[in-house]
Image (tube, rainbow over the protein chains, first blue to last red):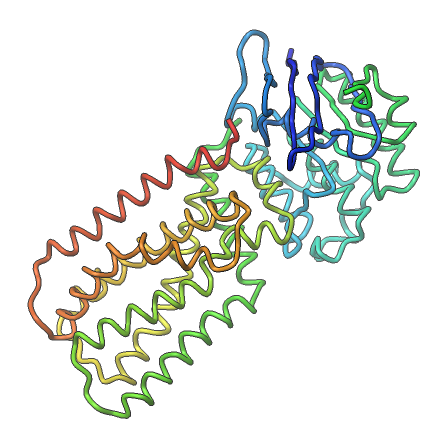
Length: 209
Length: 223
């Protein structure tokens, strides 16, 4: 059982307070949506949750049972998707997956590669020799999602995961998020999409902070 | 199962080599820079026999500036491609540091293998102590690689640009350059020097590598 606890967390950029006195808890087995208008701090909240940045005051603690996860142990538990996160444009989809999954100790073979791509609605044979830099934005997004699915991470941090996806892609993503929650993953997403918000079990409304 | 640090370093190194070989412009820039500089020096000397001290200094100036043409890209290319965040999420700090350091060492070694024979031929450098020269160059390149990798990470982490890498690189690498020039001078038949200079470079290389390893955790994990 993993949890992310925000305790009176605050964050400012260039003197402008983005998050003010935020307290919330996200739990394994649940989809939690961070919602709020543009600039309300949704992406910042995800970065704080993954310890990619630190709060100015307050704390953000990730726990597995009673143990606090930090450093490498925390990173190994996390998968993160965001518009600013990209895969290597000069590598193929398989080379990218092989590299990133290898770092997580997940060796990729033909079966896993095919399974991952099928789950995210991509055909392995059509992209075998294509470098990721030549993919459309939606294909890149699907591949990133596939990487997250295969990474065995227990915490999914998703920043606008449906952005650039077609209707079928959004449906796939919602389906996989629910499946992830049923497998006891902790899923925290930042979204403005009403369908993604509707699919969440809990919400953190940042317009109040 | 979590891969060992050694396996992760191998993965990062293999990725660096694959992406590096597919980005030929970077290689062309470094190789052409070193070749053009060497040809200019060769024309300037116009066949006159240069002193070993001058030859040694010229060799290290060439190696230093050739490395500058590529070292600051160790992390900034990742940032420009938007892949730095993915690397931060999935890769452990020590694997990134040493994978990139080894790749940088590999790049500098390739440049040196290209440059050194041309340097000896074009500038008429008579090598009296080839083993000493190779050991000095190897130790010096490791120091440049370690310093370059760490500084590149620091600069990307600090979000600062505009020539800061070159400004910081010189004082950090000076303890390598001074003895390396003395040793190279000796290898080219100049004054005899103590091998303690080589020991000094190796010791500084070790301090740079261990220091980079300790510091890099703080850069990689915001804790």
